[in-house]
Image 1 (cartoon, helix red, strand yellow):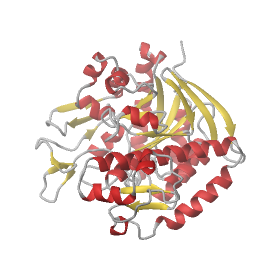
Image 2: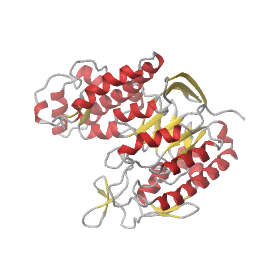
Image 3: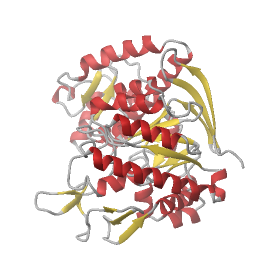
Length: 421
């Protein structure tokens, strides 16, 4: 059988789990570590595929749950695959829908996210308003919407669009992802809240392991396994014993790579990543789901992660929050109204926005509620994070990681909490 991907480690960090490598796919190479912007519905909000490519984006990730509901995976298959449907000719990933199970089930109507207290993963699922109505990004959703119900075989949920009933099993998730045709897909899993009891975490982990095996067996029975790589997902919440057990069980299955899933308390994340990556096979790539803050990227790379997906750069951008080497700024702040310098004040940023526009112009666009604000802000934030991870990769290859990390974080963390937001 042909291998759908090939992973080669080029350089390892001395005294740590981090490494720089290359993942070869049918649609091109991914130089790792690499940041993976999230194109939830087959598009990165406010940006074209051509713009993404110009920003140095190597790979994007789309959402199985959303594309299944709209426009439908069968239509995308008929179009030739998601690559052709969205006009993206580089490597592409799709998640399993497992996080949406979590969001529509135990987390429905709460503020629980991938990292507790951190805006990070674009789930685009309903929250309940004070009036009791279901709301999705300010739009009321179907009155028939109900929280999802997880059982031993899968999850029953209702569409937030029209209230129609659906049932996801591991086989169904993989079938949808086969129709979408991404280069890298994920096994179906149950993502639990960080504050769940150890007893429930253990039950959910047992389900995730069984679903992983079912996902893998179904995938291997289809010809798609020759062109699509399947990653198994490690769960276990914040419990060390469960995380290590999951890494052992999933790591012994014949997956092409691994995802590290779950929702974390911020202070737990470094420990959980290290527990897992000390056990997972070194020769296969590892993807940390839902991480995109600069300090978290350094942490995860040092502890052996190769890929990261997150909507933080674009969601922050659409809210007017922009990344700079000196911390984040809120461009709507009055002090930027007459600031004619670029977003990155020392003019070191090579993005299209910084090369052509000022903070004052961005401030004006946001306050005037012009659509262009979202595009220019997203261009900058995506460029910033992609370039940062590229620079981290280069620092590993040149044996300068510790120096680069220290110099970057000293400035970024110091200024992070200044009155710019």
